[in-house]
Image (cartoon, rainbow, N blue to C red; front, side, top):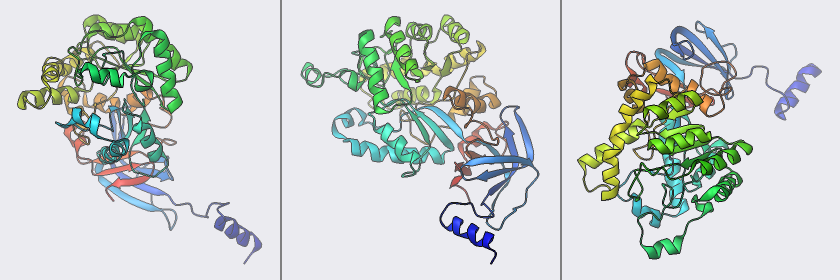
Length: 433
């Protein structure tokens, strides 16, 4: 055996050199959706090496090495992995949701979150932005990134931040005795005044959050009496935004009422989540400032429908808000897209059952968004909102091998996206062959 060959074999066995034929995965795609142009390209091959796409080629490329794998998707439509910019992996809808805050331990929450992550991945969502939980979401992000558990790539806000009595104040509606006993502060996501707001941001940065999530108005699924009123001053939001910006973190803002939205947009938040009661002025302000809108239509529909069908499912104060606020979200979204507000896909999964995220595509198109633009919201736009368009959002060389395949043509029948037959994340197949 020549000395060069012996040396290469030795180096390969020690992991110091690549084998002569590195394994590639070739995906033969009957139709490939180019989300930039909106065109369906026929008979394309995606070449995957390790966790990246290395090429997209016209025609069906044959295997070039004995270890190459060919995956036949010739009857499918192939798209980039979907991105959901608003989920809560720690949460699941239940009649017991309020009681479980007092009965579940962090380990209980973690096991549930792991299961929710896998269901989400298998639904075709290869990346998610977790918009707040107990902090278990940070540990889950690490576990997924390290390959310890399967799940989508996670960007997380850790614990979200609001004012006393705000959406993140878990003592809303409790007795005075319990409020005195718990007395949440910045570590628990409750902050008042610019100084405490800065401290709350730094707490989440220290814990390892990727972004900051705040609430500038009340919410639906808390025990406060009103979900629409503004609950942070513009000065407080500016303190949050500036501190987060100094630390390299974007700010997502939960907001339903128009005044709280306008304060947040003027203060420079990156995105408005929900925006149920956006008025014309708020929409124009968002368009002018290029503030992202993450509408979560499915969440609004889900809570309103549940409150109508099951009057005893929610506490009365929550049921009233679900009916008055949740039912308006889709119509508000339809108005916002006419004002050229930038839209990124998000669903508030955890408010409804995980794994049904793709129903949002249909609700967006019902409101007037073109199917290709709904898909772009969950690919191109979502990648830009996450600040990672170099790795996510399209099927192009150099991007992560996050790939979904469905039957039929989603540009004609958007509901096909709810039934993926193939899901790959970073080169590993989770659904399909």
